[in-house]
Image (cartoon, rainbow, N blue to C red):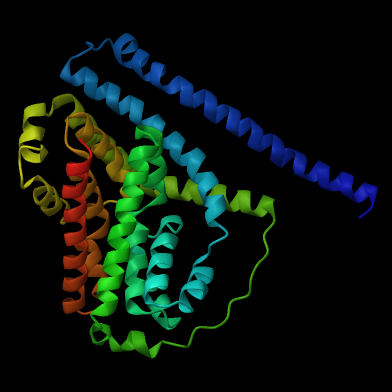
Length: 350
């Protein structure tokens, strides 16, 4: 390449570098300013009483909305850049050539960086079966992807620190791996709808597209904006519920329902979660409020995982490709795993 060509490349990339640099600085300024700004708005501008139920609820809401949005806009853009190297086609290609154990562990790990929710379960299931991936490996991915959501992971890291975030990831991976292995060993392929098996081997080979860094940054930002737009309603509802819990729910009530003194706390919160539907990010503000009221980590994680992995809407969606006996086994295995994790972490982490 000539000197003129190199200069043209540098001039072409300068606006992108400048934009990224300004965006990072703006994000950092907003991150450190939002907490004192929320406090000032609540107690100085609005004149609410510090320590009152309503004042503390409003302060929680005004603090969490910008904090969660900043985490989404900033960190998820970076995570999406990394995830861009693992498109679904590449995931299927990697998983298709592995055995049950190695494939199950790999599928569960890929689920962390592929943020599919229950609405994506049917096309993902069909695509994996079409590629010849074993049923247990497919379910390991379907469990891990919504349960170990990368949005929830970075939100937990940002709000609670690395320990709780890594505990959440390890717990979700454990459920996904064990669930995939159990379903694989039970040989329940007969409960998959016939039309799904008829598609096996009909998938074509997809060409690999080489993207520049400019393309990747543009695509990551476009994805992040679309993600934020889609989950903001869940987040606002979740933050609103979290604010009400933080401001109004008596600590004694939360302790009675989900505290360590109640031996049935974990199954109770799992039963409460099953009819609900939310992505993992929408549950984070509720998790934050429940932990703040003294609910143990294991019970709180069980509630969060149940909402994302064994919700009734997901079962209804999966019925389009598998029959009820397999759905029942899937639900039983995952529920058992969530209950075990809830009790285990309540025992290990005071």
